[in-house]
Every structure is written in C-alpha cells, then in structure tokens.
Length: 477
Ligand SMILES: Cc1cc2nc3c(=O)[nH]c(=O)nc-3n(C[C@H](O)[C@H](O)[C@H](O)COP(=O)(O)OP(=O)(O)OC[C@H]3O[C@@H](n4cnc5c(N)ncnc54)[C@H](O)[C@@H]3O)c2cc1C
Image 1: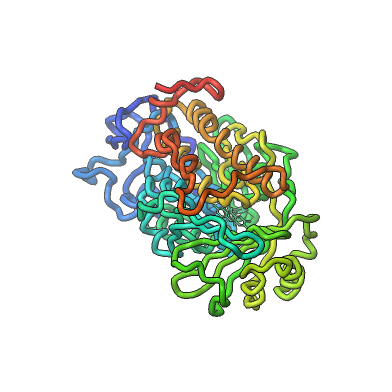
Image 2 (image 1 turned 45 degrees about the horizontal axis):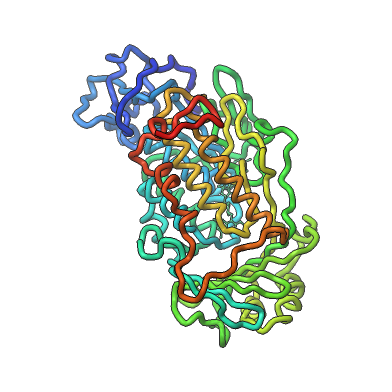
C-alpha cells in the first residue's frame, strides 16, 4: 500500500505533563486524525490500530479516530536503515507515541552480518529503557570480566567489566547481524513497520515535508527523516554535503572458529574477554559457552583497497596476520590458525568530528552521523543511546527544532569524544591509561555516569532537566 499523505493538519501545540502522551478523540481535538481504526490506514503502523482495536483502553469504534498528543506537530517519522541505530530509534519513537516506519535496504534482515561486537553496559542500559533487554539477552553471551595479556602471554590485569553485577547491564558479546535481527524482531512484534529491500536513493526535504525516493521507484513522505543508514550514509549527503568517512589508521581483522580452544587460550573462567597487547597487533577474543571463539585483531598500516577487501580470502588474511602474531608468545596465533573460513577484514573508518547532523527535516544518527574506529568498541552502544535520547527529546520538547537542538547538545560532546579517543587509539596517538592493578574494579564510571543515566532514564523529562534554546546554551535544573 502507498504511504498515506503525511501533510495533515498539524496538531495544536499542546504540552502534556507525563512521558506517555494521552490519546484523545480526534473529533474532540478538532483535528484530522493521525491514528485510527484499521480501515483508516489499512495495514497501519501502530499495533493497536493494526489489530483493529482503537489505541485507547475503553474506546469505542463509534468514537472515530484517535490522536496522540505530542508536544508539537510531529506526525510521521521515516527511519532509513534497519540496523542497530535505526531499529532502536523506531522502538524508542514508537514507545514515545510516534508513528514510525523503517526502510531497510537489505532484503531480509540487515546489511553487514560478519562482525561480532560487544555491547557495553551503557548500551545495555539504553536497551533496558526501551524494554528490549530480553530480546537481546536471548542472543549472544554475557561478559563479566576482562583480562589483559602482554606480548609474552603474561596476565597483567583482570578486572570486572562495566556493571557486571546487574544482569540487565552486563556486557554482552554477539554477532552484529544477530543484534540487528533481534531488534527488528522486537520491532515487528510491537507492530512497527519495517520495509525490507527499500534502498534509499535520494531525499527531497521541503518546509512542508520530507520525501524519500528508493531505488525501486517507490517513495515515502514524512514529517521527519532519521538517517540511520550507517557509515556510507546516503542521507548524510544532504545533511553534510561533501563530508566523507576517513581512514583511522588500522586494518581490522575479525573471525570466528568453533574449533576447540587451543591450549593456553582459556581465560580460566567463562564470561571473560581477553585483550592481548601484542608487539604488532592489538588482539582480543572471547569464548562462548558452547566453545566458539570470536576474535579481532587491529593492525596499523595503509588502508586496504576495496579490490583487496573484495577479493581477499581467509587464507590471504591469515597470511597477512600470522607473521605479526607469531612475533609474540600469546594464544593469538593459535586462534587465528584454527580459524579456517570465517576471517574478514575492514579498514577502521570514522566520520570526521564537526560533521553537521541536521538539515531541514532530516537528522542523522548512529554511524551515519558519528562512526568511530572500532577501537573503543562503543559504536553500537552509542547508537542505542542516540535512539533513546532522540525519542525523549521529541517527546518532551515543545517543538521539533528545540527537540533536535536538545538532542544534538546532549549527544555531540559524548559521541565525538568517542570518535576522537577511538581514532587516537587506532592511530597510536592516544595513550590509554595503564591497566588497572590485578583485581581492581574496571573504570566503568564514564560509561554509566550520573548524567548519562539521567539522559537515558525513560520516565525523566529531558526538556524539564536539560532543555535550552539551542546547542551551547544548556541549562541543568
Ligand atoms: C570490525 C568492527 C567491529 C566493531 N565492534 C564493535 C563493538 O565491539 N562494539 C560496538 O559497540 N560497536 C562496534 N562496532 C561498531 C558498530 O558495529 C556500529 O557502530 C553500529 O553497527 C552502528 O549501527 P548503525 O545502525 O548506525 O549502522 P549499521 O549497523 O551500519 O546499520 C546501517 C543500516 O542501514 C542500512 N542501509 C545502508 N544504506 C542504506 C540505504 N541507502 N537505504 C536503506 N538502508 C540502508 C544497512 O543495510 C544497515 O542495515 C564495530 C564496527 C566494526 C566495523
């Protein structure tokens, strides 16, 4: 079915007090409805509507369509990209009462299914605010501690990881594609529309609305466009013309083997990730409860060409990596040797800090706005944080402009610090703090600090606490 026209009569500017916006009869509000019974929109995007039930408890069909009172005239939100940022944003915006549709290029789930990643406690905290923890803890496995080995294989540190004591906030290790798929399944379960095989070609952003054109010739129109289409974002061409991602100084190899863990590899306890400070490569690995080993290696050097990445075989990548790992006496070389087929490589790439995120009715989030080199392992967690803060800002601020300004003022310092630190680690210009002494607590404060918790806390009013006319003029009450 074609997208319904989204240029409807805007809602009057009504501020409501609680985080959950009340619904009211469109007839009582004197406005054209945004939501209605199934017949109104056909296969609609709101679960209550889709099932043919009016979205208000106690409502009767004879009441006619209902509207959700936003603080401003936000109606339909288009999200481009059904990866981590886009799907989480859809979950958050839907939870905040918005009408949202996700358009994902990949025909089935999401692109780039290769790498594994670690979700840190801050990312898990964001997920919890979306009531999506269970969907994600059903895949992957938890990590409670990290140990650090030097080039001789000696353990120089072992620390608890993040907020290890809380099962909902514990670090998690999982394939990147599994995370996106779990979020998409949760979105579908909540009745959020995700259109697969929809590859964005171009954007037409006007004062009246934003229209996206897909490569299959279809279009969609909304009031706000959220570009969550990753590192090579098409949406970013409009918000930041001429800005290109840049190489951050390292090649990143990653792999998986289900071969039995080579001798000497075992961390001695489960749920531990091992980081190896090798002489020529930074290496890390984690062994899943069923014995599979996920690993990565970061190696300084010239960027690989697209042709080399496209044609490289696992044997080729092993051949590049093993001489560097064999210079040390750590488990790294044995793990890579045991990895026969699932070896991949990419260039560490970042979006330059200062890249504009907004233009007209369009905003970029996640990697599209602030991709960082993977050295800090924070990209996915930052994307999840973006989703929560964006939905809260739109929910709580009195208008779209003020909401997006608030969002940017809260997010830009934090995500750009990550881009800078991660890029510095990859380029060898950032000096990480010395490893903590054996047995001491991991420095989790930066990831779970009080201000971040207040940004993410779903029921806290973001505008009441941090609202300001624009970036740089933030006030805290
Ligand atoms: C090797 C490597 C290791 C990493 N390790 C970690 C880690 O340990 N921890 C961590 O937190 N982060 C890690 N990251 C970063 C993390 O993967 C990203 O930050 C995260 O995936 C960003 O999510 P996103 O949704 O913004 O982008 P993506 O995950 O890239 O999703 C973008 C989505 O948009 C879709 N799309 C693209 N173009 C279009 C289009 N034109 N139209 C429609 N849809 C489109 C894609 O198919 C995709 O589904 C790692 C990254 C790499 C490369």
